[in-house]
Image (cartoon, rainbow, N blue to C red; front, top):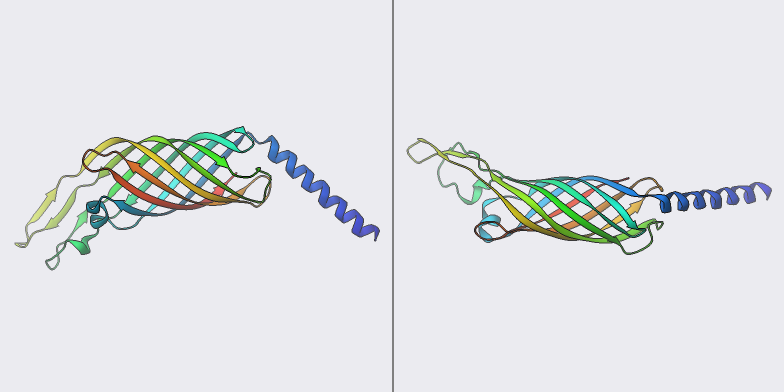
Length: 200
């Protein structure tokens, strides 16, 4: 009986220490990756395949449930040759699209940060560098053709939601989906990254 009481007291003490540590936290750091789905316009969806994404982010706790910070991410979409190639052995290379994002992000946790499972919403403005690499292929006559790539930098907005699981008071894991909208020179471009990662 005494052993059981001592064990329960230790658990209560440990939980209390975890709560204190969580409440004293001032910063959070996140790293993660996942898949990226093209949304629009139709030319974007038809030209590129579902891609991959990685991100690094940091936030400062203004309150126990609200952080402000920055997000840096890379999004990469491969050219979808299946929708365009009509000749044998076209010898295609390049044509991939890369988007490098830098965004300011506000994040609001729906419950106190001491909860084991917590949901959050986020959003903010940013800048995105949009790059398409040179596209090379052979035409019907077998001659090499190069289509020069393009670069542009645009304003963007991002918004999303996610869930965080606190493994301990010091670190956890997260899953989030985020809608990104770029105000590109022709039609606006949008895509949906879904990422999983670690937060400390």
